[in-house]
Length: 133
Image 1 (cartoon, rainbow, N blue to C red):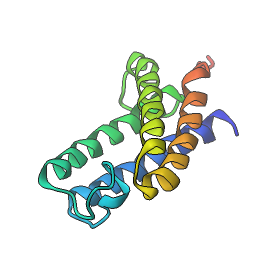
Image 2: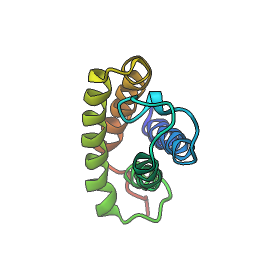
Image 3: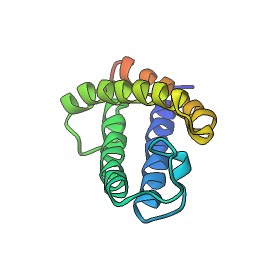
Image 4: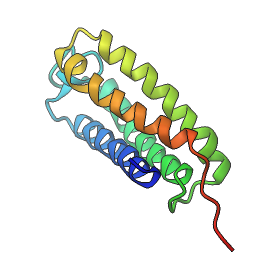
């Protein structure tokens, strides 16, 4: 997979996670697949946390687009450093989902997060293409 495809796929998965978090924040009964899977509908505090996560995942998508050399309003330095922050968060998320007591998180989200992590590492480690003059 080339850099452009990896970047688009990684940013797209950020969008998928953001959409899932938006559904949780709106009260969708998907809580068994998130935040430890303790309840179908999230309590208010976790719904607020999901709302914050929507913003963070949208920003992560912009960071990855910048790092991948695609159009994004994020500054280059933020893209370079932020892409590694996204990698670190995904690594932690993969471990937490794999260790979760929720089967949805363990067998559903954990593999998705690992794929997302691999894509983000590919984006973060490749040098940004320089424009030709």
